[in-house]
Image (tube, rainbow over all chains, first blue to last red; front, side, top):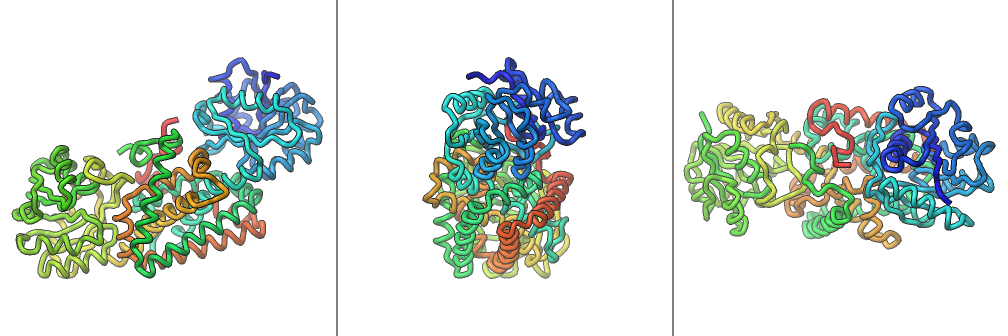
Length: 300
Length: 300
């Protein structure tokens, strides 16, 4: 099978970037779009995020081979229900959400019998909305597919090929494992970034002006992640609760051990940890997942 | 008084950047250097980090108006003791360490009667060593001076003027307050970055290869900070113990509250925090302390 018509539901950073990437890198594919917010639809039309932006989800998906739901994971069930009556039987339904078991459950509930392949392109920025997308967002980033039981291999391969055209690399795993892996590589990092920025905002002994002025000591890095979309991230934590709480427990144990090392003046334990964490960054740079320049290449 | 001859003890990222910045922005100032490591001295000579690199600290400081100790805070006392016999009486002694009360104590102990003005330019990258420095590191960054009791205003102003020539902005505060502010804007961020990278390395259910592949979900940001110099950071935590443990306690309380909100499904509490943390990032960008581009301006 071949994907020739794609419908995007939700035209924020991810949906908009898919639209722009299709237009730039796979121009033979026709792409339609819809967003529940009229203001977003107007901006998406103005930026040309998809060939056409429709006034209803039904009109956007009516002729699609592939529908990608690009909405917060808490809105998946309703977004899927909204297209159930008009979804072509041969169409693949996918998404870009950051939790995969909850999405698999919600899409199965709203679209019984449909070809459901949840997906998660591990890519993004702290920006959101229809102005934030760009065509190269997925280049050299991994897109994880978590096909539901019974989905045929040809459909999985068709979706994989679509993402490869956008520059992504493909991995297939089961949704529970995805949720555990992403809890540690994405969800816990966001949670602790939000937390430290909140902690710093609430201090009485240190003013917000001081926090801002001296943020180049490391804090500013965390504020980028903590500027991410609040609704998206609220939903991630509510829908990947088990894995997030599990990984948070591990993190807290490790932090408590470091706290004890500081209190007791155990410099060797600190030095040992601080030395071995360098290896992972080298791996990330070798694998092309981050900029090798000092300070992320920030201008100096 | 006017600073015409500067000696740098320790020619890593900070010491090297001061040398290069002086040569680029204040070429009338003569600058000498020394590092305890012969290999670092050789590289410093090859890169021309200072006008002259001497084979002993005594030779480097013998004629200086200003001596800047650019060594880990745990090495301050010994580094200061090593120049006590030859330090000119009129010379200002300063440093670039990340804790200030411990440095004030150590310099006072090793250099009784000297003009001691501890300082902390809040600037750096995750790189270290004599190859890592560059002349613009301090531009638009804040340099905090914590003059010891009894130091004359003219000396403080002379040091401030030196840092302004290198592009820095100046703030004066007492060392205890510095240590509290930097605990939250620098030390705790480094501690939790080191911790999460360690946690991710140690998981059995998630491979290191998976952590690396999917690091673009947020984790990779933390690996930059966690690639910082282990000796420098061990010393920071051992020498700013009280403030770090105090701020770590606040952070842990806030994280526990979020954990409870996730467990109980309190989406409103999550959304409220995730919304208000955006304001601090806007402040940081307005104040010129971070790149306004999405994703720190990483190439896409």
